[in-house]
Length: 204
Image (cartoon, rainbow, N blue to C red; front, top):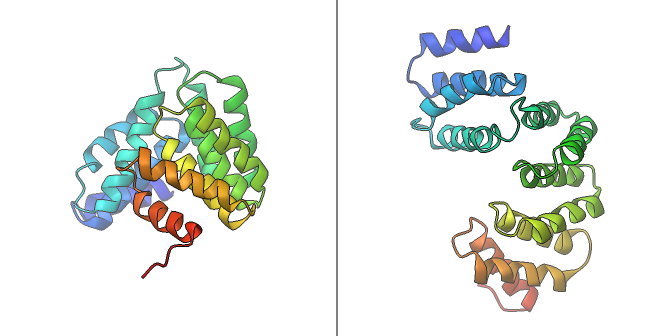
């Protein structure tokens, strides 16, 4: 029913931001259902959306699909991940975590693993299971140092150490890694500011 509603909006308000939001929701629904080809074809168009937020979201989702759909002809790992994503969206956090465990155990070695570890870590944080989140971030740092989630893992592990696990020195060290090794990271400015605060600098 929702799918039909979004389709009607998309048709009646062509090229408006509302229409593009509706198109993104249609693509996301297809992704949740495991219809990756159709979702990807819709997301390709939305990459040039006039709304920067929709364009960024569309690009992120398109990359998730295109980077991971070739690992397995049945696309089972990606289907599990998409279903876990839906559970997370529905606030069924524990169900999402269990399904991501299935990806980690049954699809180890596939390219979706670092993304799965990161997504699961964020869900553990939501349940205040900080040690489990810490273990996931540490695994990304140990095993996926060259992949795109490395600066995310450094930053969010540093935040865990600073805010919840009372390990300020470890947090400082991780912020420092972003400052010196990941100058182009979206976390660079925040990491530098937080590193200086932990070091005891006076910040204006």
